[in-house]
Length: 238
Image (tube, one colour):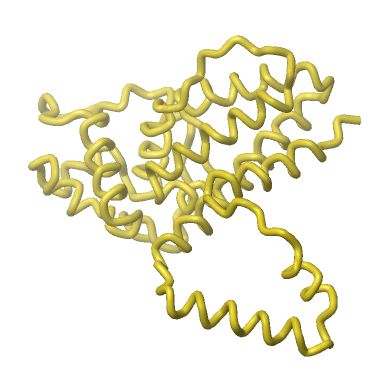
């Protein structure tokens, strides 16, 4: 294990992380706050991705020595936990449920998508098991309140929230990767010609039928909404 969070990291103790003061217990008065250090790490991740976040770079951002940061976050895994909860404060947790739980869940998913697009490193950060901090718990509380009309038990409500979050994270990761690829018009035209040729060879009748059907809006928002509607409208609450 390394302090930067390499293989073998035992995981973060949620009691120590979230129920503690967030300040070093010993030594002289700290020159920096855990909030400032976390904000600097988030800025690095927003600009250059999660891989760019190291204790050395974060320390340089706040004007501190790298070793001094370990009293706030002993390893990168802990720092990422702090980062996830830090940006979770952007999610609006206060909301009066309407009783239409499907509409509420869809609204939550759209909020999550916008949130992850602002912080493209989040989908990767959420693949690891995280202990929700106070800001994440506030948004979870909103989601559980939205699901109350379903009559699902507590475990099932948590599963639904996890399912929606995983869908959004996966979709945003794909959406971001597609946007980064920035396919040239020539390549797009070549792919269209290729699929047209394949559809006309007589061996792919299902594909030919699909390609002959009227197109649908292909904007990222419209595509996400279609996928989300299929998922939420198909949820079974029995």
